[in-house]
Amino acid sequence: MSKDKRVYVTRKLPKKALEMLEREFKVEVNPHDRVMTREELETAVKDIDGLLCLLTDSIDSELLELNPDLKVIANYAVGYNNIDVEACTKKEIKVSNTPGVLTDTTADFAWTLLMAAARRIIEADKFTRAGKYKGWGPMMFLGGDIYGKKLGIIGIGRIGRAFARRAKGFDMDFYYYDVNRLEKAEEKRLGLEYKNFEDLLKESDFISLHVPLIPQTRHLIGEEELKLMKETAYLINTARGPIIDEKALVWALKNGEIAGAGLDVYEEEPNLYSDLDKLDNTVLTPHIASASIETRTKMATMAAENLIAGLKGKEMPNLINKEAVS
Image (cartoon, rainbow, N blue to C red; front, side, top):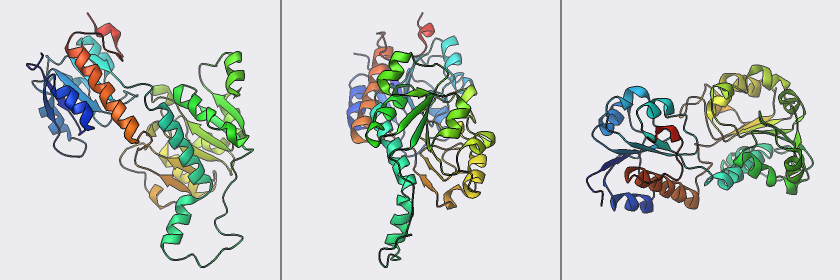
């Protein structure tokens, strides 16, 4: 047994994952159901062998300097832009993520946002709950049709493809853009048509973002890109907040440059850009695209499996930085 090893978990996770860790190690969990402060994280990271962290935890080189004995970091997320992987590799700290597990759940939720935005579900719900519904009217809450429209997908990885598969029942034209174009046989199989970035923005009625947050995708959608979109178009983001310039988006939504947006992630999360929450043509959710019981439990057990394997000297199932393995 490896009970001599200590691990820290930065947020309460589903019970199954914590029990897995507790069978192997001395485990401490953040007692507060909130994101840890920097000071709390600095205290927690000292004198541990393994860290199971969340996307909301910034694991930078300065934090790593506080514990030269840290061996493994298991990130409870697919993305890992919250971790300085290069610094971890230099220190031979193994880093893992939880890929694949949230693909279908996130694709489902992107469609939830798209449909809710297009059909003005949030506005109509508030209206009804407020007792304002006095009877049917032909001009009440007119939204946009989805069937037969043009769908643009930016980023055609696992989630982008899953999102595209769900569109087939709506008899839509499917466009995609990705820096790595698919083989033509794969495009045909998926029913996708490749468009360059500008053409996709100009022609699509709905645009859904499915790219990772890297320097090249930060503010991928900004003032110029929003101006290219149709005034009747909707923008959906379940990827990462900084992919959109939120200031430019608010301006575009206020001034009718686009019809609406469905957002699950934000540029300065959890803070929203001024007035974003006051706009009726938005659907805003608190980063819950993967929030199903099944998916969040699987994510947690995957992270636990990664941490256990790494600390026991075994091959980690989802190791990101293979160079860190000496």
